[in-house]
Amino acid sequence: MKRVLVLGLVFVILPLAASATPYISPQEARLIEDHREEAGYRLSSLDIESTYDPLARFGMCASFITTLQVSDTTSGSFGGMREGEHLLDIIQTDNTSESIWIWSHYYALTDSDSYHDNIDAAWSYCMTHPAYNEEGESDLITGYYRVYNCAWALRAEMEYRQVYGDTQYSSYGDTCASYLCHNPLMLHFPTGFYRKVNGLVMGWAVGNLYEYGEFVDNATFRAKAIDMADSLKAWVEENPNKLHWDQWAMNGGSVMWGLVHSYFKEYPADLETWVETYAPYLDTEIDSSDYQNAWRAWAALGQSTASEVLGSGIYAAYFEHLADTLVANDGDSDGGIPVIDGEPDDHDQSWVTNYLGLMCMDRLLVTASVEGFADRSLHVKVLSNPSIGLPTIEFALDEPSVVSLRLFDVTGRLIIDRNLGVLSSGSQRISLGKLSGSVSPGIYFYRLHSGRNVAKGKVVVLMFGR
Image (cartoon, rainbow, N blue to C red; front, side, top):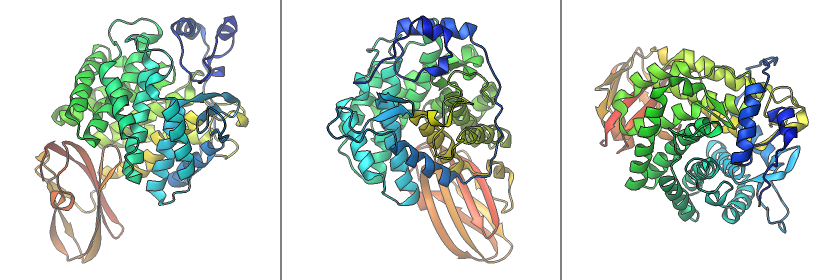
């Protein structure tokens, strides 16, 4: 099983970033909270270079983490993901679940199944060390680590099943979802370390539980996710500054993402108003030396979520800055990144690299040039928005043109990818519902291309329908 870091007085003296991300016990959490009150801060001095290809960078992430997977088939940790280049003895279930997602999604993006053996080995580890048996027990105040692990397990199982059409781990996904349903973390009464970390972890949990419930068509999972998300929403509204809280490996961006992907999927009518009110509280940069790049990744996820909902180039710019800063941490260009600025190039860590892939590079692939929401070169008009089912869009062409249409949900999943062929000049109407069939309530983003012209925007579906 995985090693739990034992912290003594030396922990209080050394920078927190010297530790990794295994479960932190209640005793260790008290030391962390004491340390955080005394810890110094430093600004990033990185030179930011933003000219990179997100898909190529995603591929570098996928390649790098293979170097940290346990390949010894006789080891009880076979297939597990080591914490980092300098932390080879720490092997984590959450890191392993993240890697399953990265490798499976790489196949979806590139049609290259080059990591299939890595995925099989990673599943072997997860079946031996399941997420719901991780350290920390299931206490509703201190049991954050199992909740965090189960949320990652759902993300991995959904992606793997969707990409490979393989249901052999579906019962594992159901068990992890059931664990989340029966073990919601207490939000309103914990103090110290748990006062912050529980809400941040629950953001990730409710979003994944709701989407898993959608994925497997389980109304109980969805309903429980909404119930927990309702409490989380109230927790934020008590003090919006919670959206820029940082604790352990988590940041308030997880809460923004989680509520958009749970509560506001069920109740989309208030989505834009809520995000417009609370998104300004999200972090735009992380200068703390603790889990700096992990917090940047979660902040980036929150910022990109806000940019998608609001169609705002401001939030897109914050997101891109955070993503660029993470990429700039790859000093040796091996695809991996460390947990804080300035660490040696041989201190890259698997989990932070996975964060870069999922929360930044994949989001860039979906929301690239999000400022293009303001680009109305095709003058698209959405008829009835919000609507029951996907609406019809209307636009005009100056001349006959080849037109293509793509539609994504808020997770970045491609719903429509259609070459509409050559359309004549003049007014055009396209029924999104006829191209996609039935869809769930929520937010969707379209991209309409005609030659060099493009229109991007969002539509809101209030009820199931065509």
